[in-house]
Figure (cartoon, rainbow, N blue to C red):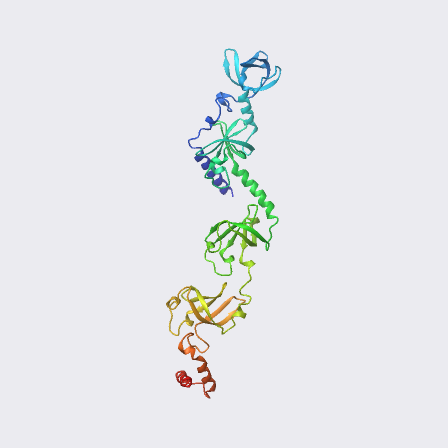
Amino acid sequence: MTEKKNEKEKLLEDAIEASLDGVRLQELDDEDTGPKAKGETKLHAGTVVGVSDSDVIVELGPRSQGVVPREEFDEAPEVGSKVNVTIRGREDDLMLLSVKAARALSAWNDIEVGSVVKAKIIGLNKGGLEARVGSISAFVPASQVALRHVDDLAQFADQTMVCEVIEMNDERKRVVLSRRKVLEEEAELAREQGMGRLVEGAVVRGKVTRLESFGAFVDIGHGIEGLVHVSNMSYRRVQTADEMLKAGQEVEVMILEIKEGGRRIGLGMKQLESDPWEDVHLKFPVDTVFNGRVRRLTDFGAFIELVPGVEGLLHVSQLSDGHVRHAREFLKENEEITIRVTKMDTSARRVSLSRFDQNGILLGSDEAADAPLIQEVLEKEEKPIGTNLGDLFKKALKKDG
C-alpha cells in the first residue's frame, strides 16, 4: 500500500514540475509584497501615531518608529489604531514598514498543506491556472484542475474555486493547489451516500460512459460506475459492446453483484429480458426439422441459431456421411441450412443438431424427399432386417412411378 502511495505521490510531483516548467510564481506577486520578500520573515505589532498624505507613522516600541506608505491602506487609519507590519529595511534611523506584506505573510502563516482554500483564478499559462488565495499568489497545475483532462483552461478564467493546498515552499515562495483533490473527496462522499441505495437485484437506470471490447461502463448515479460485460448484454451472442450500445446512451440495468465495497459493480441487461431457453423445447421438440442460420464455425462443428439467444451444435459427424476435417468445408457463416433437432437439454442449455433425417438421409436431398415412400415400404416388408436399402429405394421409386 505504501509503495502505491509513494508511486502516486511521485506521479503527482512529476506532474506539478512539468506544469511549472518555465513558470516563475514569484512574478505573479506584486513587487515586494509576497511572503519573505526582501528578507521579511516576522510580523510586528505596532500603533499608528501619525498620518500624512503620503505616509503613516507606526510605533513599534519605545523610541522605535517606522513609516508605511499611505497607499498600502485602503483608507487612512486612525491615530492609536493597532496594525501588523513587516520590516522592509531602514533609511537613516527610520524603519521602512509594510502592512501589505504583513497581510501576505499572515495569510501565508494561516494556511498549510492539506488546507482547503478559496482561490480566485486570475490568469492561465501552458502549465495551468494562475490564482490568488487572499493576497497570496498560487498555481493550479493543469492535471489538478478537474477529475479528467481539460483541453480549454480558459473556461475557468475569473472563477473562484475551492482547492486543497498540496505544496508550500517557503524558499521558492510557491503555493500549489489542487481542485481535483476536492472534487475527488466530494465524489467519494456522494458515492458512499449513493451506495446506500444499491442492492443486488435492484433495477436502475444509467448512462453509458465508455465502451471497451469486453463490455460497457455505465454511470448509475452519484458517480458510481458498473460494468455490463458482453456476456450479460443479451441472450444472443455479443462479440463487442459497440454492437449493442454507444457512449451517452441511457440504459436500464440490473445490479448483479457488488464487490469491494462498491468499487466493482457488475450489471446486466439480458436479465431484464425473457429467457429464450424457457420455452425453446416447446418450439423445437426432438426431430423438428427447421431452417437455421450458421453463427460460428469451428473444427469440431458449427453453431446454428434456433432463435436469438439459443444456439445448437451441429457436430462435424452430422455434416456429411464422409470424413469432415472442418465445418467450413461444407458451411459458411450466416448461411441458412435445413437441420434436425436430435437432442434437447434445456437445463444444460445444450441442443444437438443433425443434417440427416431419422433414416440417416441428408436433409434436402432427393433421397430425403422420397423418405416417406421408403418408410412405407419398410413398414410393409416382412423381414426388414438385412433388407438392402438400395433395393427398397428402387421399389419405392417404382411405386411412386
